[in-house]
Image (cartoon, rainbow, N blue to C red; front, side, top):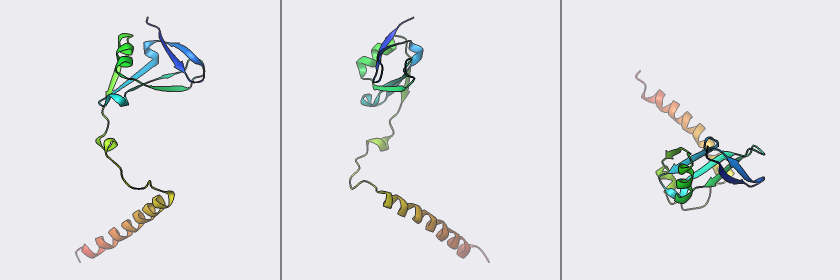
Length: 111
C-alpha cells in the first residue's frame, strides 16, 4: 500500500494511506483541494491541490471526486458588505411580505 506524506499545521509531517485522503477536483482548478483527518491530533486538515498535487495523489491511489463551482461564486460583487442591521431589516421585510401575501390572497379570493 502506498504511503502518502502530508503535513498537519499542528503536528507536522504525518503518514497517510490513500483511504485517509479525500481529493476534491473542481471544474476551476484553483478551487481543487484535499482533506484528511490528522492521525495524531484528529483535526481535519484542508490543503489546496494544484494539478501537480492532484496527479501525485491520484498516482498514489487516491480517488478524485469532481465537483462544479457554482456560477454565482464567480460573479463580481460590487458595493458594501452586508451588515447585521441589513440582515435584520431583511428578516423583518420577509415577515411583512407574508402579511402582504395574506392580504392579497383575501382580496383576490372569489366571494
